[in-house]
Image 1: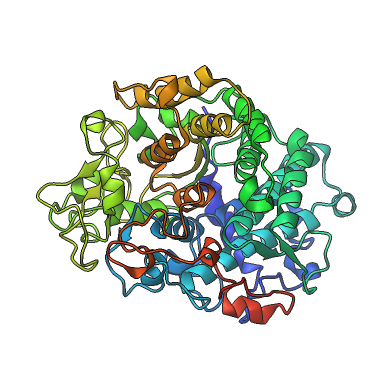
Image 2: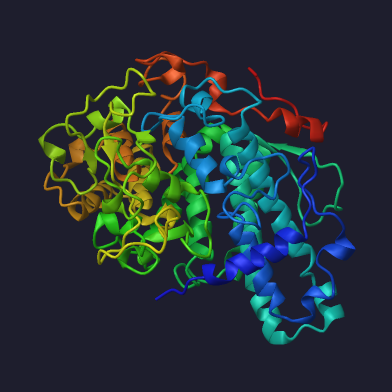
Length: 532
């Protein structure tokens, strides 16, 4: 069984964050190459493991002084936790989720698709992602052969550092992947650039080429898929990112790469991953230990004691406790949770209506006497709720804390590969129709849904709906709708899209988020995206 890494992540993050300074203008760079991570720190060769763990921990934590602390100047912890802002930008902005408390900074604009370059959640995502890039670059600068030679680092530690360097490069590529997807550009900095130099800006095509070449270059230095410590990246994570960029290549570059997507889906399907015994095991407090351990390809780790944060699973579990149902005890948090903070939009609820999905394990909707529609977002008693995530284990035990959850967020999991294979096949990427049908039916069988599909039922609209059923609230939906041409424009409207209660068309420039105004001021090479 894979081992956890998060027991060392807090110490590592404290150490690493203390050595970084984020300037007022949000130019996320380390202070000084000589003093940042110098000889004193690396007298103990165990520091290399600690520092790479700190790079990972930036995906989960926001600062050094608890869940409410942020190490990025001028940004609140709640608007800069990586997984949370990713969830908001990919899910809250689409047709699955509604946040009741619209006085929370930035949420009203995101869920109504009326954001501007001043939105704090957009700023949090832009800044947090660049900070991961800065951390990864610094680790790479401090592990060159020249520096290892000067420190007399042992051969055994050097062998580990080969893997650590590959993982740092992967985390940097992952960060650029999200910048490419959300913003279409990024400040482009690698370890080869001088610290505090003014970075160039890479556009989508340049980022795509870098991500692809970087992941291919490190493939042999990453350990085989599924063989690393739990929470650390391996070859399977690299293959997953490649599959994702190839599936969305038409959006990113104007050229389809569905055959390449199919290639990496096939590699992932042959890499030893397997679906969890039960769907819900992916979303419980022991998903690092139960059968989901072999389905989750890469998590954002969460621990109610040692990595307390207002990340995506803490938000979703506390937020999905209903204002009427008060079902917190069932999901392992305080009885009232956050009082109905999260509900689902009508269009998502309607995906489950009809006899095909009554007993489907993926259907965790609680409707009760609630109306399906949400006419007034502040009325927490309207709209259905769901109970997908829980801070309880597969054996029924509660998590350590009743607010901060133990449930890891499944950033990538095998079920997504099944559905990507089917979609890439339908889009002309090759593969086999019967295999595509079987992969979709494997998910339905696992969910105890007896309504298996036939070959003629496997269509692209079906795939889009099935992705919503299988992967809802996992930060994929905006990307999916854009790939299908249904996010902007008026071909598909959902409740509160464009600030209309029944949904209205939105302009095409909203397929990209704006560059935050404060980030523009920190780099004259950055320009605003069209339409903002």
